[in-house]
Length: 77
Image (cartoon, rainbow, N blue to C red; front, side):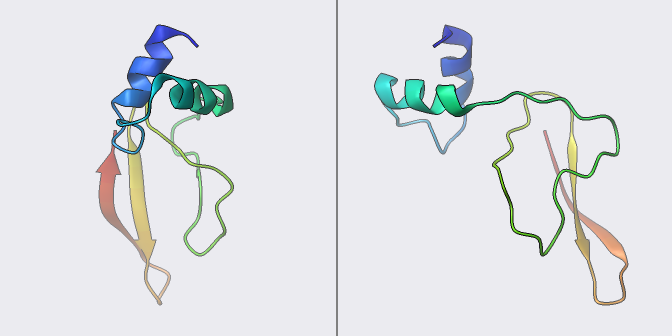
């Protein structure tokens, strides 16, 4: 496991208390991906298939109200 990936994982509160072996196991599951600007990563109401951690850049979290209007509720990254 590259030290840089281990250090990055330990900065995420979910993984902060894992020991080295557990971090190695998590690191083996990590798949880095890049997305173009304005790419929809997931959609409200749809079952998720993965967890996402922002390494660089920014994500907008939108809520769609009953009238179909999008409201920004957070920015991550």
